[in-house]
Length: 188
Image (cartoon, rainbow, N blue to C red; front, side, top):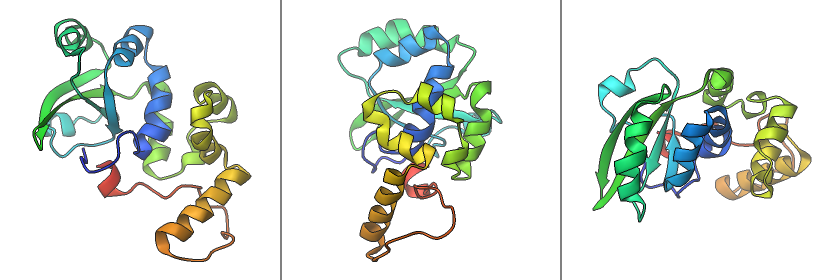
C-alpha cells in the first residue's frame, strides 16, 4: 500500500470501498465501522505472495491501531478471521508507525464494479439506483457526480486537469470518465 498518499484519498476508497462496505454482512460492517481505517487499496506489494496471488478480487484495508486496539486485537480480529470474506491480515511497519492490513474478498455483487474500476470506467461501476443507495451522504456528492457523470463533475474534472497539467482546457472531447484512471503511485 502506498504510504505517501493522503489518508482516504485513493480511488479505491472513493469509488470501491465505500460501496463494497455495504455489500458485506452486518457483522463484518459493524467490525469495520469500529476500526480506525486509514486507507483502502486494491493491491499491496508488502503483502505475502500467498495473499497477493489469491485470485479473488480483494480490498486491502489499512487499519491504524488506536485507543480501541486492545478491543480490535482481542475481540474483533479473531471474529474477522473466521468471516467468509476474510482472506488474510498482517502488520506493516513504516517510518516508526505500525499499521495492520486486513485483506477482504470483494462481495460477488460487486465483482463487475471491481472489474470496471480496474479499467477506470467509474461511470460503469454501478447503475443509477445503486449509486443513489450507496452514496447517500452529502460528503459523497463529489464521488456521486463522477459515477453519474454530472455537469458539476465534468467542470471539476476540467479544472483539475488544468491545475495538474498546467493547461487551459475549457472542454473535453468525446465521453471521458470524470476522474483520471488508476495511478500506480496512488493505489498500489
